[in-house]
Image (tube, rainbow, N blue to C red; front, side, top):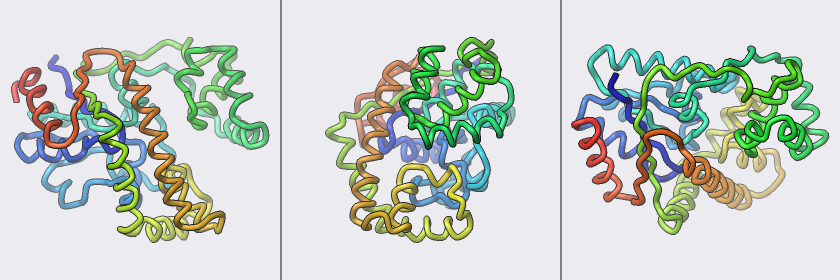
Length: 302
């Protein structure tokens, strides 16, 4: 079976733009591996491709859920593999694009066959997380499975899910059997210098605020006052705090910039250890597209 190309990398490195440019030249359809673009209404803060751009270059797994709905890696895997199969069956090329490393890892390496989530256990864990903090719960998971603790990182949702499985079954997730991936993959990871990326992340955050991010979040809060998980995404969480009167608009912007840089650092760390057939492209801007096209020509004949 021919491999499926993956375009990954830290936030702001230009993945969406490269995919759109390629899709205007070749019969490509994008399979989004972005944990936030799946939600309708989260547009400005995700730099989501516009409806016009998605008409020119079809995108899958974008605008498929309401912000009140839960998205899990298992659900992503099911939807992404179905989309990839559909695109291949129509004789077109699926291109997986995104920076959610956990999603990309599940696609290419398989997913542990875990029991379905138990909402009551998770609710109790969320309460415990709020009362005790992240560190002691992470330490509990680390004692049982350093591998799971490393995979969780600083992500509270993954921590809650891993501990839920551990406490219910006595077995950490990494000791469950793994379901093999449905397709093989070749990955290109954009790897620009931080000196190139950091100013662009700042500029993007300021542009999002100028283009109406606050109004977007205000509208979402009116529809979803319970603050669903989607509104904990970077940019949205910081604006929610501003709208609640916790700090100024300028402070919200500064917090957003700090958060997005911290996220990019975590992505660099994650993708540095990406398994499988991986090529790193240490370029940004126009040079990145030339490298991307060269990689596609070498591996996929495009």
